[in-house]
Image 1 (cartoon, helix red, strand yellow):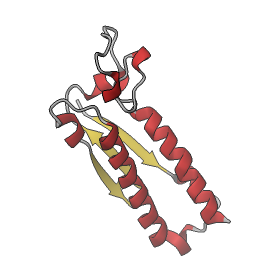
Image 2 (tube, rainbow, N blue to C red; image 1 turned 180 degrees about the vertical axis):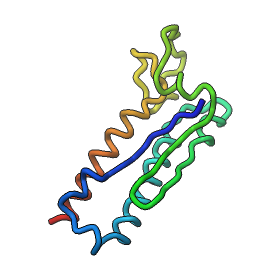
Image 3 (tube, helix red, strand yellow; image 1 turned 60 degrees about the vertical axis):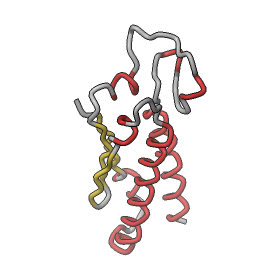
Image 4 (cartoon, rainbow, N blue to C red; image 1 turned 90 degrees about the horizontal axis):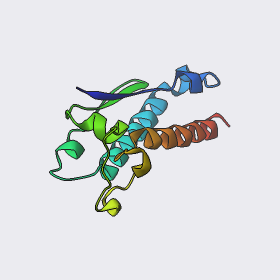
Length: 125
């Protein structure tokens, strides 16, 4: 099972003249996706390090996928019904422990999207 996060910014580009800024925008997008991947890795809970190191990105023009193919990734990201209390909650930097989510990648992505839209709005001005 692979977990994939697709990043597509078409809606945010409506106000931009993409032809004139295509290459700089692609560079900015690539850098920001790599920053997102780094944050996902940095906040990943670590036992053996396999889950953290399995995150990787594929970037093509203005589309990207960040994926993890570790079998148990879905349980860390989406939680489980049979959730036990965590003994050391300080180990989980981005978690929603009440819902059993040990690595809230969706929250990280939501924050990144917000930051990226602000960055694009500054470029438009």
